[in-house]
Image (cartoon, helix red, strand yellow):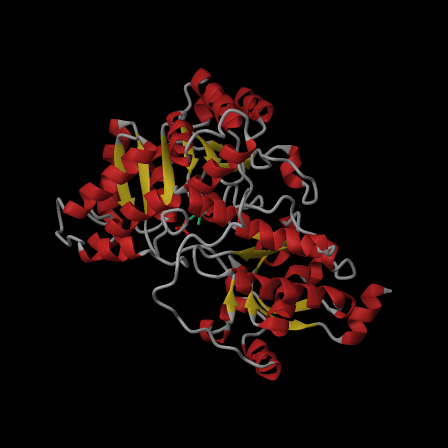
Length: 461
Ligand SMILES: *Cc1c(COP(=O)(O)O)cnc(C)c1O
């Protein structure tokens, strides 16, 4: 018989969380100008703002931290870090960075910096990836398959790249204007959806044919490997590590945020097989990040990542991880709550336009819904929609990102309860209006207020 999937760990150290009452939360929201980024974290009961750097480390990671070698050059911790990365990723050069975006900045500066008109295809660029591509004057093009753009449609590998569209783009702009192709595993901005091995191979074949390097945005490589194991024919008997090794073998390098499947609170890295590029990348690294054996991290951080990468690939952990995200998604979907289907690896995304059909996109339905979830139960989530992307937003989503190894099933049951409570009174939820916005990345600092009831009623009519 098969048993219930349980958390494959027990808790040795606990961190209290604080309940507030509704009137307090009303005041707190007002003080934060209805922007959940501006709330003090102490006033949040369950924090699902992000899964980045918010995970719990294991006893093995804490033990490794005590072994951190803080030598400026040639640190023993760097050797451990590099051998753990190479064991999984297989690339020749491993360059530590303080976060994923530092790896991105260095990669695109070196690969796209020189000539104008460069184009970088990706299944879907993450926001920092897009910003770093555009910062060096190149164009970021998203080529996810059509199924990946429809929230309610089910597909096992909704993160796949449209291979025909990639081939057509290369034909159109010419091979010399495409310095690299990127695949984001899993596709974070597209709902945490995985990419199949078949798709990786097909994209790699197109790249090889045109002699274009293929790089992975590898932040959630372990979750992606597990989805391949359970959803793709021929991989059921392989370990997640074997699957990850095969996947990376089809590429030439990667960028990585260790705050995701590195199971660490900070860190990242850049890998490449190309000796010349590695030299240029290390030169840039020294300029702003640090010497190539620490790259802006402490020796103890390198130790935590070395252990964390291996733990992220443990099968019982991944089974629990994917099951607990699906548990949240399936329970709210069963009651009619519209979500991006199927639930992703690290997060559940609520379709706020379908949840609040009476609130038009320019009244920020996902911001309104995120505020209600906080008001109802002290839960913090994040808007991915019109506030974040302006009029270019194709969807208005509320992302509930699950920190790794942090919350138990009863916490998740509570989140389900709160969402269903808000779902029952969805008709009464009003839109929001902006009172302040910064010129770029406005979602972090925007100020809003609920729109007056009579305006909301007029909009509805
Ligand atoms: C988080 C993330 C990044 C950036 O990593 P940081 O460590 O936050 O700088 C890049 N790509 C994807 C897909 C991510 O999820």
